[in-house]
Amino acid sequence: MVTTEQLALNVYNLISEIPDPEIPVITIKDLGILRDVVYSNGEFVVNITPTYMACPAMGMIEDQIKEILATNGIQHVRVNLTYTPAWTTDWLSSEAKQKLKKYGIAPPSHSSCTKLVNSPETVACPQCNSKDTELISRFGSTACKALYKCNSCKESFDLFKCH
Image (cartoon, rainbow, N blue to C red; front, side):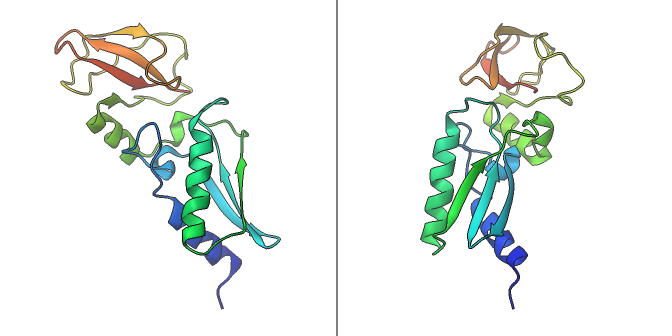
């Protein structure tokens, strides 16, 4: 007999490969926003944590979760946005950081707790690995990224901000 834990794990595995709408090379599992799935009172409860409070991608992610599960015959689903504990870049998998760099986004280089959020940092360019870079704007293509410029290869790039 299949346990409720096994059913929840099957649902987790079905949705774990959903790509992040803003950075399609990483999944919601890689990003660390897919917290868990539980089966309770006849429904699957999917808990996700936004990267920040007003993340516009959460509605799309919720829709994708429900669509994939409906396609697989799972109708009774509730998606919870969980704000505690707050998401941190520490939840990014090592694989996610590698995928970000390959995609042209500098991944966070340290734990979110080791650097002040508002202080610029030395960031290696994801294109040429030069550390001769400078902060252009604390806000990049999305609020969770900062915009940098490489003085060596002259390319601009986003840094996935630590928090």
